[in-house]
Image 1 (tube, protein in one colour):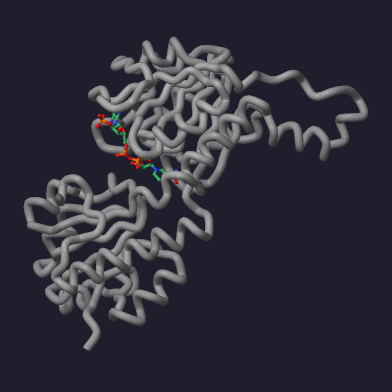
Image 2 (cartoon, rainbow, N blue to C red; image 1 turned 45 degrees about the vertical axis):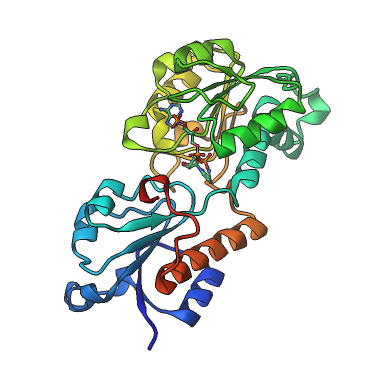
Length: 313
Ligand code: NDP
C-alpha cells in the first residue's frame, strides 16, 4: 500500500505526478476538519514550497510527522524550532537553483540600471521618432554590495567580477575563504556601493533589514536588487524613497505580500519587477523536483536526508 503524504502548498505538476506514482498524496486544502483529524496520525511526511507556511500548531496536529520536505531553498515559512521540538526534520533544495537565481540577479541589475523594459516601452509607444531614450547608468566597474554572501550571493559575485565590479559584502560573520571585502554594517555597505543586492533569507530577525536608513545611504544614484525575500525590505520605505527620488532604482523578484505587488512600484522606468521567478527555469525546477523526491525517498528508506536544512543536520 502506498504511504500517505500531506501536501500543504502548491507544487509543480511534474513533481506531483512523480509523487503520486510513489505515494498517496493528500492535499490539505481539500480535507474537511473531520477528514483531517481522521487521518492526521498517518502522515509522516509533509510537502510544501519555498513560500509555504508550516506552523507549530500544524506540526503539533500531526503526531506521526517526521519530515517536512520543502520545494525551494528558503524555508522561512516553516517553524523550524517547532520542528526540532517535535523531532521533525526539514529538507530543502539548495545548490541546484543557485545559478539561476544569480543569473536573474544579474539580469535585474542590468535591466534596472540600463532601463531595458522602459526602453522597450519607449519603442512600443512610438517615442523613438521624437528623440532618443534618456541616458542610463553604467554597470561595468560599479561597486556591488551583497547582503547575504551565501551560495547565491557568491554566485552573483563571481558573475559580477566579469563586469569588473568591486565587491563587498555583509554577513553576520565574515567568511574565511573569500577575497571580497567584509563590511559588517549594512548602512555603511549601502553608502559605499552603487548596487545593493539582497540575498539573505527571510527569517523573522531579517525583517526590514533594508530599512529607510539603508535606502538613504544607498542614495539617489544607488540601485537596490532583491532576490532574497520580500520581508527583508521595508517596502513602504522603498516606495517612499522612490517617490522622493532619494533612491536611484530597484530591481525586485520578491515582495512583501506575494502575489500582490503595490501599484506604487509599478510603471516606473527605474523599477524592474519579476514575479518571484528567479529559480523558475525548466532545468532547475526539474532538479529541485528531483531533490524533493530524493529526500522523501531517503526518509522512507531510512537513509540520511540528501539535503537537510542546517537546523536538521
Ligand atoms: P545561504 O544560506 O547559502 O546564504 C544566505 C546568506 O545570508 C548567508 O551567507 C548568511 O550568512 C547571510 N545572512 C543571513 N542573515 C543575514 C543578515 N542579517 N545580514 C547579512 N547576511 C545575512 O542561502 P542561499 O544563498 O542558497 O539562498 C539565500 C536566499 O535566497 C534564500 O533563503 C531564499 O530566501 C532566497 N531565494 C530566492 C529565490 C527566488 O526565487 N527569488 C530562489 C532561491 C532562494 P550569515 O549566517 O553569516 O549571516
